[in-house]
Length: 369
Ligand code: PHE
Image: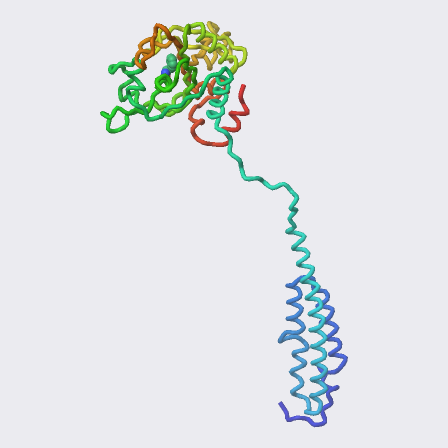
């Protein structure tokens, strides 16, 4: 670089002449005003106020001017920078406001729109059916009784005239609780609640006893090791098999509508005589019987579906709880709840009833025949 030229006229330094600087300001202002995003604005600032911007480059030329010219040139540059910065700030405010506005618009929430509520559970079909069964009987003046699921062997078996050698008392059928000689079992049916009701209540007794029962059964489409039954028991003066038949017919109609029933002789130690209650098959209405062209899966072409056991209370049971069988008599019945649900709702696999999928509960309830 040569030494300072005292005759140097700032006008002659091209980059510093007034028109050139005005031009830089114009270009900067145009670029800044054209920027319509924060990113675009950043770039415009870099281009027009940054280290390599025309104005910065021009500023470096000042050193080459004679001292007396530097002040004027410095003022021009300073004013130009001031103007560009001012326009930049204005535009920055506008762009920021516009971007905020756009974000707010895009992320707008309509607080009046319905939101998805917390998913609700559903009453389990087994519970719903138990409620319905209880209703049928309480409407007739019966009471609902309950008993424990862990039961004494005497109540589960002996008091019901099921002797010590009865096959159902073996470990292949019954779940015993350790230590085995304490005589505690997971109740295999709701019938022990009959005994409890007779021991705890004054006669006459009219009770239904819904509840969970346990058997050493397979877990397959038609068996669950833990399932539910509903027991019915009435003990009063002058009760006969006719009362049993009338009550069960009413029960069946309340639950299944107009359906034919039949009692088929059977054996239970705690009732005498005993029977199985059958319902006419809902699906084929008996038309599959002897008709190989129209087989019915629901009743296996037998025309009837076995619903549950029943009978006249065995006098030995009454004796076991100290009731005079010459004065009192009664009837009892017991039905499987899951089984009832299967043929009432056309449910094909009992295992779905214990898997706990709320959608199953909703459809099974909705799909009731
Ligand atoms: N307890 C019997 C069972 O589990 C059902 C039953 C109850 C039969 C009452 C007769 C009377 O199979």
